[in-house]
Image 1 (cartoon, helix red, strand yellow):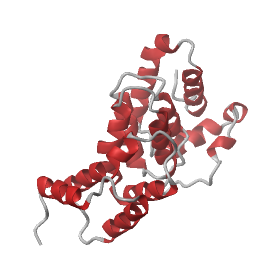
Image 2 (image 1 turned 120 degrees about the horizontal axis):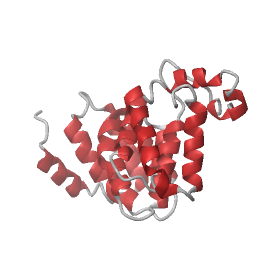
Image 3 (image 1 turned 90 degrees about the horizontal axis):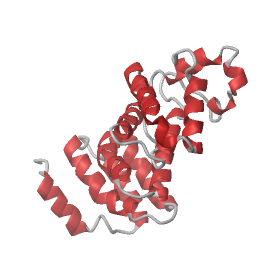
Length: 222
């Protein structure tokens, strides 16, 4: 059959009330999406990410339910790039603190997104004026366990202390993070942190972030 165009797909989502359906049904729907053959196009996945999740996530005032987290993880397992383009971008640009939304993005970065999408999230953050709201997201990227050919067990990166970094750990950490932070993105991060330093003179989160960068990338920061 011919693929649906965006207005048709949006109309179908509205007809099915996907933006407001019970969350346990959302999990089942996302499981059905993953089983579709062929895969959804990028455009269709973007429309569905918006219709399924945007309203739910932006309206969060408490931690997401296990059903919502399961649906998010399921969708991100196959369509993380469209998801980041729509939902993560909206969360990052949303005015105000948005603590639950920020925590959710951090959890997705740490647990669900693949390395290319982690890079996309960081690039989206660095396109915006740095704020207290965005600092935890950058911290989540730095604390991310690399997936792929360089796998490490849970808690592995956290086991490195500054003292351990002085005895040769930096080179190992740089290797582990190479897939997540390519040199050009790392350079942009450092440049952003340097330029924004005066605005965060009293920020504990900023101090922690800079310490993490210096600890993990001692050999690359001059």
